[in-house]
Image 1 (cartoon, each protein chain N blue to C red):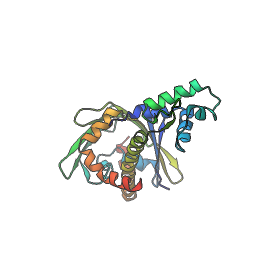
Image 2: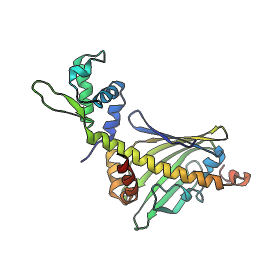
Image 3: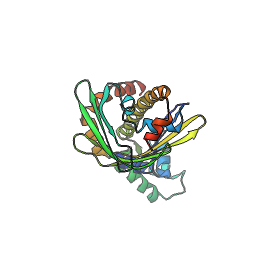
Length: 115
Length: 154
C-alpha cells in the first residue's frame, strides 16, 4: 500500500479541511451534515472532500442516494506513524546530545576553530 | 524543559524545536564538529557513525556514514550554505540509499533561551518515493525498535 504523504500534508494545509477531519473523527457524516457548521455551499464542501479523498485521508460509501464519508484509517495512520518515527529518532538524538553537551567544556580555542 | 516539538508547516515542511541546557555556542559546535557529531547523531539505537567529515565553512561539504551491527549502512552528503556563528546553520543534504534522494534544505537556528538554547530546525518533508527508499534499506531494521514501541502505544 502506498500513501502519498505530500498529498496528505497538502490536504491538511487548509483549515476547513482540518475541521472536516476533526468532525469525521467523531464518526461518519454526509455532505449536508458536514456543510452545516461551515458557511459554505455543498459544492464547496464537496471540493474539499475530493481533495481529502485523493490524499487518502477519507473514504465514502454508498447508502441509497447518500454518500457518507468517514476517515480512512490507513491514510491517517501512515502519516501519523511516519511522523512518530521521525520524532522518536530525533528524541533519541537530542537526548544523547544533552549528555554530550553536559560533558563539553566550551573553550575559546575550540570556538575560534569554527569561525 | 527538554521536550521536543514537531509540527508540519504548510504543504512541504516540518519544524522541530528543542531546548538545551547549554549555551548556543556549545549546541552550534555540536552540530558542526566531526569529533562530536558521531556521539549523538545516530537515530534509533544500534547505529554508529564510523565516518564523519564536516567542513564547517560556507560551501564546505559534509558526509556522514552510518552502520549497524548487521552490516547495513547508508550515508548522507551535503553542503553548508550559510554559517552564522552560534546562531544559524543553513545546509542542503541528501541521503544515499544507495540512490540519492531529492535535496533536503535545512535551516537550523540557535537562540539564547534563559541559561540554555532554543534550537529550531526547519526542513523539507520527504516525498513518498524517498520515504519508501528509506524503509527499503537497512534503516527499517534500525526502526524496528521504534515500531515496536509505537505499536504498544496504539
